[in-house]
Length: 248
Image (cartoon, rainbow, N blue to C red; front, side, top):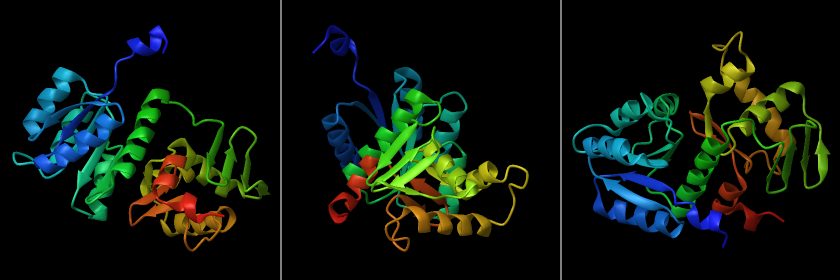
């Protein structure tokens, strides 16, 4: 191990949840991945620790005893760009959309697996580290996207995409691994008519999946967040979902 590697401190995760069992579960998984962990069980403690400790990642439950976790997100976003992954037993699509557009980097509904959480945490942390265009070549399973050359292939076979289909895939690649809401994608693809009927986006997505997915009826690369939006999986998320074993 080099001197530079030894001098790099581990990342600090702030876990905000009022249930001790959940905090222990999260601490164990995050520490096994190399994080340092601090815990808060109230909204007030969360804000205080965020100010005092400047965490690299916040895992935020919504059901806190003194305030809704959404208020913590709003407060954090007023002065910080720290990645925030929201946890909740609530599965309302409207709430997911509101939180993502309020600045949450991702949203996971309880119960969840540690592999899924760690995969999503890795995505948001890499996103913060780059804060730039996506890598010129992205690979997920058998899908390869070469942004510089505008070439998309699956299992070595080059696929033909329309300009609009490629633009949709490129927009998802720019937020590789994260959820993009319908509204965010509409603004990206139809900047002059962002309030166009979302059905146009669904039709475009269906055409894109017909091109890139092994089975468009059961997509494994671009997955739907029901009534919220879409996510282009990373390789880690692909593996965590168990699809690597199923693919030939």
